[in-house]
Length: 196
Image 1 (cartoon, rainbow, N blue to C red):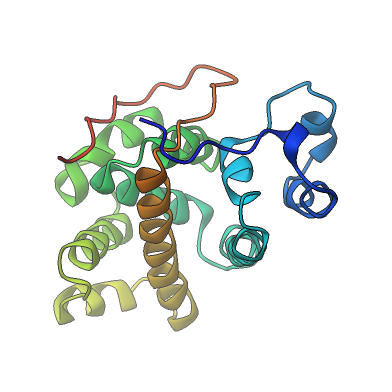
Image 2: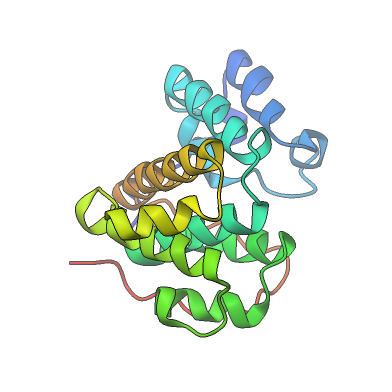
């Protein structure tokens, strides 16, 4: 159920029109009506200071880190699955495949680190994600395993990606933000109903 309806583009003020679409790589596609504006931008248009800050932070995570894009997308997908974030799941199943995750790997995300399709680093990342979501910490053995695969900068980036997408899941789930209509079919498991 939608609780906070995304603000339609026609209702955006001048500042929102100037700032929010600039985050997109091809804003003219959305401005022309060729494709509908992503629902998240309509939600963020309701509070520009928060929206701008979130998009700037997300820009760093998405485009200015050294963490392998496949690992970043795997992280987002696991957070989305565990939090039942329909918006994140719908967006990132496609983005994960574009970043190099196979269909088989996307289908293995619900099974977590125990699925046989993962490399040692992917398995360690998935174990760390689950520990962070369960108890907001990583045990020493998992941290040591991660450190054997990732430098300190990427370890920090991984922690921020988990935290950011947990935050985003709280916002999208709490607001009841509906996934954007798919632009192309994506082979991915169906997300279970939200908790409660």
